[in-house]
Amino acid sequence: MDIVLRTATEDDVEFLTDVVVEATRAQQRLPADFDEAEFRAGFADWTREQVRGDLAGSSTSVIEIDGVPVGRLRVVRTEELVELAGVQLLPDHQSRGIGARIVVTLAEEARGRGVPLSRGRRRC
Image 1 (cartoon, rainbow, N blue to C red):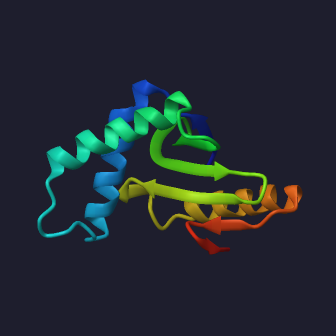
Image 2: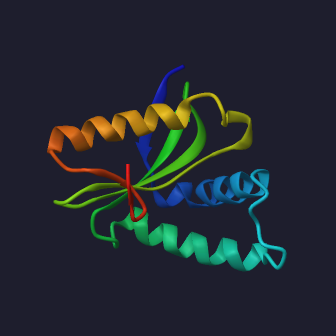
């Protein structure tokens, strides 16, 4: 299995939004009052800011397996840490070790820089 992290572009925004909605739905974490159209619009706007580079230190990637887009990765890098800000995979690609491999790669990057890897506000 060949995992590639490709820098996301504005052309990827719809796919990235789909991944987040589908992954969250599969995990049964959508709130009862979830307004999908409203969420999609807001998330797409926020993602466009990320891929344009409007959010300092933030990078968003499309996760590809053997050339096929299967997920989304967002990482925030500062002088003090590497933060795993979000990783989502389409349901058919979950529980295959893809996320674990990505976390290992980020941990190696953080270790090489001499900074911690964190997930949100928690350190990993």
